[in-house]
Amino acid sequence: MSQSDQTLGAHLAQYPELAEHAQSWRHAFEPRALNDRVILVTGAGDGLGAATAKTYASFGATVILLGRTRSKLEAINDWISANTDTQPVIVPCDLETLDTETANNLALSIGEAFGKLDGIVHHASRLGPRAPLAHYAFDEWQRVMQTNVNATFLLNHTLFNLLDTSARASVVHTSSSVGRVGRAYWGAYAASKFALEGLSQVLADETETAGRIKVFSVNPGGTRTNMRKEAYPLEDPGTLPIPEAHMELFLLLQQPIRENGDPGELVTGQQIDCRNWHDNLQWM
Ligand SMILES: NC(=O)c1ccc[n+]([C@@H]2O[C@H](COP(=O)([O-])OP(=O)(O)OC[C@H]3O[C@@H](n4cnc5c(N)ncnc54)[C@H](OP(=O)(O)O)[C@@H]3O)[C@@H](O)[C@H]2O)c1
Image (tube, rainbow, N blue to C red; front, side):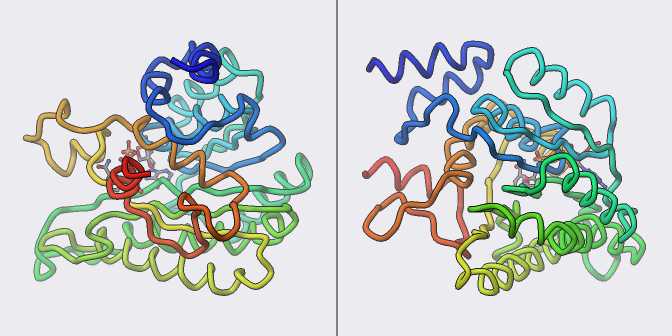
């Protein structure tokens, strides 16, 4: 084990699930790599969102925890306060009913508290029913689209000026395999993830020239979370990676992007597949 591995291991001692994966990371991160960054994580109460928030805070970021269930946000808030030297903010918010007034108030509060926003990671998502389109209830369709697409657009739209104030902001849309190739019975969830891919590409193209905001879509692939359990109730969760397995990538998505010639470079507008990304890294 190298000196930097030992330093990282000590730094992450309070977060053993992450420390275990960090041993095989190909990129070195300083313990304060995300110092001074303010990052909004949606769906922060559980699964990938909770792991992302805890990881970013462990590397010095101030995280804004947005989610539906207050008690879950408070548990993540308590963990971060106890185990890192950062102080998060919680924003209980049901994205299914997010409107312009609530989004504007959020932007005002972030502006007053921090004066900028360095990143948004859009993890919050509604799975909806698994049913053929011919039998898919329209109200369910609308609920999925409102949560997964409309709320994502509204947050990006309302928080854009704060992102544009950052020297280098990052917007990450969490997608899915069925948002890249449609599959039977995935209904509105699949369509919503295709829409997110489009949103991601349009925003990346609109911000590329100015170069201050980088935009990505990330497909985590099968990961051990509640949503996966809901989609595949008979699957053995033990066969799946835990959310922390993806955190090297999620850290890189918040790092300054190195210019041409670096094989690990992440380019704005990129569609990233966690599993391929990780496998490709093995070759470097
Ligand atoms: N896990 C996988 O295998 C997998 C694969 C491909 C893509 N993904 C994507 O990964 C992302 C994270 O999902 P996950 O697997 O970590 O699922 P998860 O553990 O179920 O977490 C989803 C989070 O989204 C929140 N959420 C749902 N509806 C919301 C709403 N209306 N307003 C605010 N928050 C809401 C949930 O809040 P509550 O806790 O209050 O319900 C929960 O914290 C999603 O975008 C998902 O589509 C996951």
